Length: 164
Image (cartoon, rainbow, N blue to C red; front, side):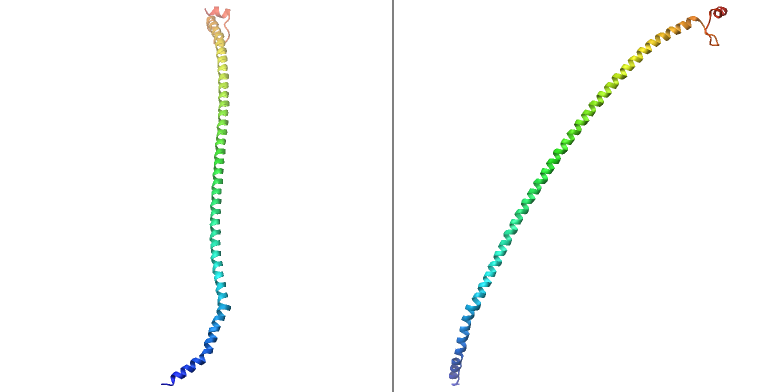
């Protein structure tokens, strides 16, 4: 068992160039490959984080614009509603004015017709009063003249005396 020590020493001595080679390879790979790769990956992560931050910022800006557009939309709708309400009130006022004028014309037409009717009625009363007086005179004359013969002829002096 005593032979193992020199054999191990010899194996270590033979492994020294391999250890040096692996160590040198690790340093070279770190400097040439892993550092640039780590730098690229770090830069990519930073760019990704920056892109996410920019995306969030743009999303916030878009939300702000959307809110602004919504506010403008509501304001425009309110203005349109106010304008429509004003137009509606103006139309109602114009309609009321037209109705008022039509009522006034109708009332004046009715009053004129009533005045004309009253004048015609007064004239008819006068004519009736005049004709009633003449008719009364005619009735009195007929009654005083005597009975009317059955034939409808006017009584004459000879027929009137013969009947007495």
